[in-house]
Amino acid sequence: MQASSWRRFYTGVLGGTVILAITLASRILLNSPFLPEAVAGKIFATVPGEVESFVVLVLGSYAKYLTVIGISIVLAVLYGLYGILFTRFDRRFDGGGKISKGLIYSLPPWLFHAVAVLSLDGVYASLNLANILLYLLLAHLAYGATLGAFYPKPPLEEAEVVKSESKGRARRIFIRKVAPAAIGIAILIYGIDRFLLPLLGTSRFTEETLEEMYSKEVTPTEEFYRTDIAVIPPNVNVSEWRLTIGGQVENPTELTYDQLKSLPSVQEFATLECISNPVGGSLIGTALWEGVRLSTVLEEAKVKPGAKYVIFYSVDGYSVAIPLETALKEGTVLAYNMNSEELNSIHGFPIRAVVPGIFGMMNAKWIRGIELVAEEYLGYWQTRGWSNEADIETTSVIKIPQAAARLSGFTPIAGIAFAGDREISKVEVSTDGGETWSQAMLKDSLSKYTWILWDTEWIPKEDGRHAIKVRATDKAGRVQTSQLRGTYPDGATGYHVIDVVVESSPDE
Image (cartoon, rainbow, N blue to C red; front, side, top):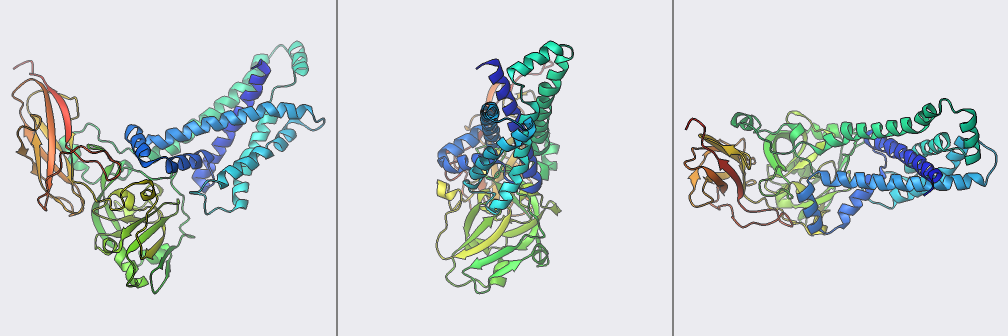
């Protein structure tokens, strides 16, 4: 590629970066279309469940963000290639300024961009064509202005400029090329750091003391895990939001946010766990939820005798169903508060479902509609092979010490155990790879729907490598299975095992 072509390509990429920055900002602030997010969502919705599970296992919550970044790079390159065509078009037409021509030539990619957004289902389903075109127009006009303002001059004109204005050439290059690129990159970095990375949540088990572990029996909201199909959480206008209840009911109902909050409320501690949580993983957390029992809402709607499943429809295009008998349990809540504060956009504002005993994917967020149906319904993930029962498996996790820790002398061993709504009756720990087991002390759980904290003491007698294992037993007497199984399609099983190294202290 010739030097002039590189300059044209560079300018197009710069303009594409401007488009991405503007559409990202408007997506966050106005819930408008952001094409990389829509394409990423389509990819994850299309790939087989086994592939999606593997990607999440390897990359965790970063999987979809890395996908968005990759798609953004591809789009910037495409806009760069279009920038090369801009000069060829420009040479065929006389008259008019560069910027005005740039604005004209930005219209074709604007239309293609809009068509691409419209062809992808998901979070933009509620937007009509006029809104999509309007949201994207501003970004593409900025692209056209960038083409006109920073596009390299024709070779002859550029040569004359070099001869007559040799002084200050470096300054002009900086103003026209380096500075805009730096500004564009800075905007993207700021957007990712300020808005995208916080949306990942900080759900990971990091090294902590016993006191710190117990202090986080209720997971801080900012550390609560997040797994959903949206890259950027929906920004719901609560004044326009309505909760509809229909289907197999005698009294179809529509509730505003204030009407929902005026119903009798309940508070309960409950633990949620993602079905993609691997053995020993951190996609699990406990919070204090406040809201309305789902049974209260369904009683108002008067469920018909033939209804068997309750479908949740979410603002982001997600849907999932739970059995009616599960929906009517006292622990099933439509929550609007989390940890004594209003739900934030990350965790499902204005309301989300909290359904004890089943994995988090059944606990829909950003709910906009509830439908009662007579037949089994396969939701977003169920059509991709994930379990439609989603019963939580008994799990136990070692949080202290960390894997590969080097220990000496007295050592606390501690962690969490969880069995959904079955509760935990016993936790056992082995420090010799499973040959012998000792019972750990259990802290009283916050409720029958939460994890339990446990700890024990260990004074190693031999130096070297030791394998520490943990297993739990629920209150029905069922011991956690040792069979190792991956997350897809029913959730992971197996003992959590960590290897540590014991070293004698110098004074021993």
